Image 1 (cartoon, rainbow, N blue to C red):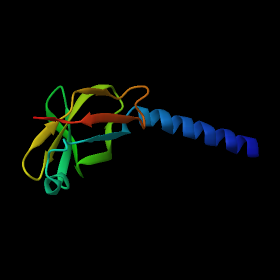
Image 2 (image 1 turned 180 degrees about the vertical axis):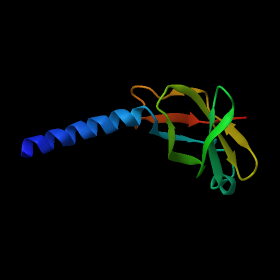
Image 3 (image 1 turned 60 degrees about the vertical axis):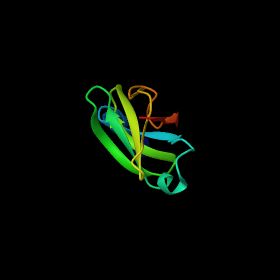
Image 4 (image 1 turned 90 degrees about the horizontal axis):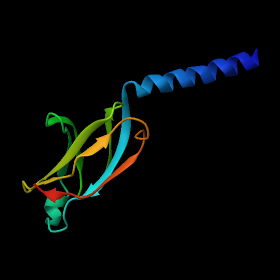
Length: 117
């Protein structure tokens, strides 16, 4: 009986993992805005993730100049880009990155220093 319960547990974990990959998954994003931004403006920025295909907002988080945060993305592979808008009104943008699909689950994407927009 104990072996049956263990087998059911493992099958449940496998099925739930497969279901998750059909929906959404977390990714970790890190990077920074240029160092020439005044400290007061660096402390209050919003990092917004955009769908590159439509330029529509996917999600947004409050961040500091050196940021490290998580976003939830579609499990299907799609291109995204990120824009940081800081308190002083300046905006900085990342390059487009392809996110989702095999190998993206829990992955850290280093955006480096974002370029002035």
